[in-house]
Image: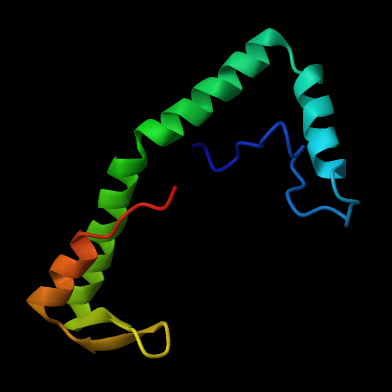
Length: 105
């Protein structure tokens, strides 16, 4: 997705002022109704394309991380005790762990 793309449902203000519960949904519905059919189709296409290319984006992201591993001879590991991550010497087991990362829905 283009970094300059503005989500027509958020009207470019994703955080905005605090609104009562349900107000955001009503605003999105109102914004959606104001879009032309062409704009609705373009928005739907953008969403579909972002989902299609998610696996490719994940692979590119992980490849970049693995390049950083090699550059610094370090790895990221998960520290189950604290729920955070730790930095450690590069390790094939940790490289494989990173390669097998799952996408969150």
